[in-house]
Length: 181
Image 1 (cartoon, rainbow, N blue to C red):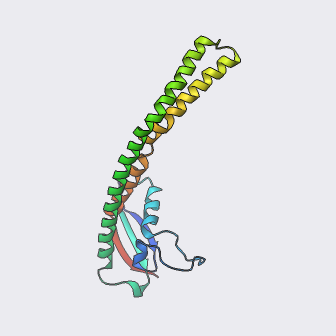
Image 2: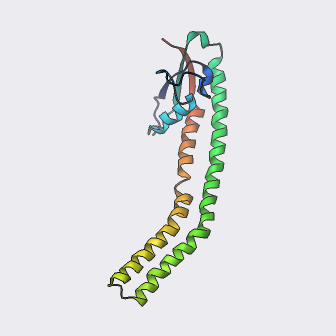
C-alpha cells in the first residue's frame, strides 16, 4: 500500500559512521546502540506493512554535522543497499540450489517411506497395531524426506526477497541530517 505520506525513521547517532559500522564504546552504557543505523532501519521497515517512501531523519551532535553530509550518507546508503540486494539475490539462488541438491537424499527417503506405507498395507492387516505402525511410519518417513528440500526450495528464499523490498525503500529514501535537540 503506497501513500503520499512518507514513512519517517528517526535515528540518533553519535557519529555519521555509526550508520554503517558499530562504534567502539562502553558496552555497558545505557546509550549503547547494539545495531548499526542501517540494521536498525531495515528492522524498522520490515516491521511495517507500509511500502510508501521513506524519510530517514538522522540526528547527530551539532559538532559532527558537516556541509553535504546528508548527500554523502545518501550515496553511501544507496551503494550499501545495491551491494546487499545483489548479495541477497545470489543467496536466494544458492539456497534454492541447496534445496534441489538435498533432494538427492530426500527423494530416496520419501520413496522408502512411501513403499513402507503402501507395501505394509498389503503385507500386514492395516487395522492391527503393526499395520498402523507401518502405515503411519511410512507416511512420516515420506514427509520427512520431502520436507527439508521443499521448504528450502520454496520458503527459505522468501526472506531474502522481503529484505530486498525493504532495501529498495531504503535505497530510495530521503536522508535528512539534523542536530540533536
